[in-house]
Amino acid sequence: MADTPRTKVVYFVRHGQSEDNVAPVFQAPDSPLSVIGRVQAARIAERVSHLTFDALLASPYRRAQETAAIIGHITGKAPEGCALFIERVKPSSINGKPFTDPQAEQVGRVWTQSLSTPGMRVEDGENYDDLLRRADAALAFLRDRAESSIVVVTHGYFLRTLVARVLLGNALSGEAFQHFHTVAAMENTGLTVLRYQAGFAEEPCWRLWIYNDHAHLAD
Image 1 (cartoon, rainbow, N blue to C red):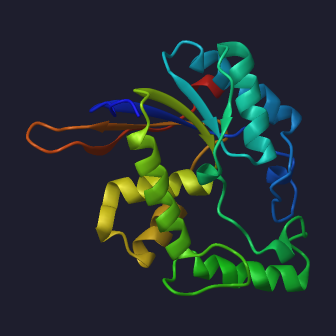
Image 2: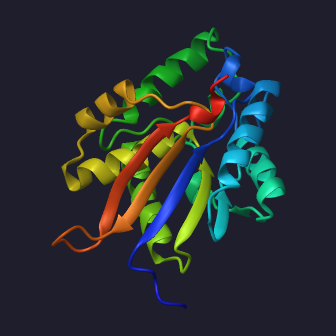
C-alpha cells in the first residue's frame, strides 16, 4: 500500500433531497432523489468540479448513489461505493412506514433514544455504540487511504456523527451526542470539510475546516 499522506482533505457532501425526505414516512434506503434533489445534486456537482480530488466515495443508499452519479458525470470521477458511509440504520420494521403508523411511531421513538443511550438496542437498528464504532472506522479508513483529497457522498445524521466525534473525541457522551444532533442542522448537498493534519506542535489529527456550506443553493 502506498504511504498515507500526512495531510489530507475530505470533502463530505450530504445527498440531495430524496422523495422520502419530504414525505411523512421513515425514510428507506432505496428512496430516490426528488426533482429538487436532482437540481441540488447538479449544483453541488458543478461546485465540486472546481476542486482537485483523487477519489469519489459514496454510500450505497440510492439517494447517495444518485447524487454521486451526477457528481461523477460532471467531474469524470467514477463513484466507489462504501458501506461505512450509510445513514444510521433504522429498525427494518419501520422503513417506509408512515409517521402516523402507531406501532412504527412507537418503535421509532424508542429507537431514537437508543441513538444516544450506550448499551440500549431496539430490534435490528443501529445504536449509539454502533454509530461511534462506525464513525471511528470511517475516519481511520479515510486516514489510511493513499489519496490526499477525497469527496464522500453520505448522509446528514452520520455526517454529524463524524463531526461530533472529531470535535469531542473520547469526551463524547450520549448526552453531548444528542445535544449536538439537536442543534447542528445540515442542508441537503451541504459541504463539510475535514482535514487530517498536524497543528503547530501536535501530531496529525482530524480537524473541522468547513461545516454545511450550501452557498451553491442560493438563488
